[in-house]
Image (tube, rainbow, N blue to C red; front, side, top):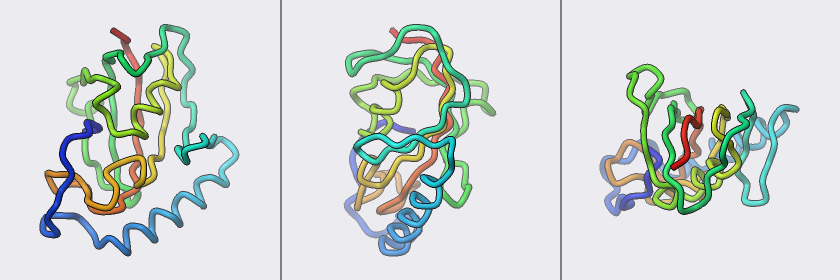
Length: 148
């Protein structure tokens, strides 16, 4: 889900209009940032520590084994490995910028909730498969199991 991949160059297939997604995303980020448990990075990534880990931390060249739940800010589930029972293995450097940054904040055994603004996700084009619209802000619940 969080792999960078090609961005969608067509207007068809994107979920939501660019203007509406951008406005809703900005409103969501402002509201979420005011929650006391939310931390903010310099890039604009928001995160909440659900469970601290004490294992190895990934770097940009690492591969990681994770569980994740990816959601739109409206609550639509885009991917859920917790439910499917299949953990993902992915390369940190191939992830969208906000997801890569988020993974490198974690240690093995940790579980974090991330809010990734559109400029750290698929941006103004949305995802190539059309599941994620233009200017979409996304929520990820990630458990980091293993760093390779």
